[in-house]
Image 1 (cartoon, rainbow, N blue to C red):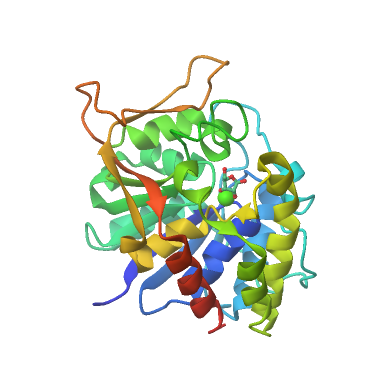
Image 2 (image 1 turned 60 degrees about the vertical axis):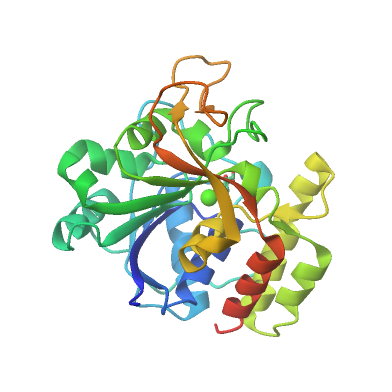
Length: 313
Ligand code: BDR
Ligand code: CA
């Protein structure tokens, strides 16, 4: 089977960085047509710079990287330096990028790529707030029918929230954008906190990254070491959840994950529960299913795949 054509929309972020490395290490499964950056974990100038740094770390300097939206559709930008550090990629010492951003805008790149490729040929992966995707859908509604599917990290049902009591960060930052995406009619695979909080980097798993003995293995171990402090303290867990790599791992081996076809609606009105993913997990409404909402992961299989693929870089 030929590799899936994918655009990765992202706000790196240490876990975004690992997700990108996994995709870039897996050309037989994932053909990265481009990386589009959005403001989220840190402002856009930093997420774009970080994406370039990660491409260079992977030795994939030909991947086009675009900057996109620098703020959510209708709200002030909320960032997460308290988790990811001032640069978004605190932990490893990485050189400033020599690669340059493409001159166009991420939103136009998404639209043009979908219009150029055959209908159903391109998958959109979203690892951050959904602003770029929503803007593309608003500007060019015809592209909705051309997307194969969206695989995204965002939302939660049983785990409820991580940035507020009821909302997950990516959805909370731009709930209006998430609402547009979830109402687009495009099939969506959701890697929620219910899954990603089971993808924990234990000491042994982090040592396996470090033991690769490569610049990539060391950088990933240093990133997760840094990122870990926050979640360990907050959840008293054994390590940090590797949220975003669940998305790129799904493209390689969907059998690692299980979930339900459900209806997901986004709260956009109440400040109290803003950005909540209202998931009809128990099928108590007649709202039609719009997503495959993941709830479980084979974590050992996931980390074995990740370590194995990172070893190639
Ligand atoms: C999500 O928010 C960000 O902090 C991570 O990169 C991930 O995409 C988890 O809620
Ligand atoms: Ca992210």
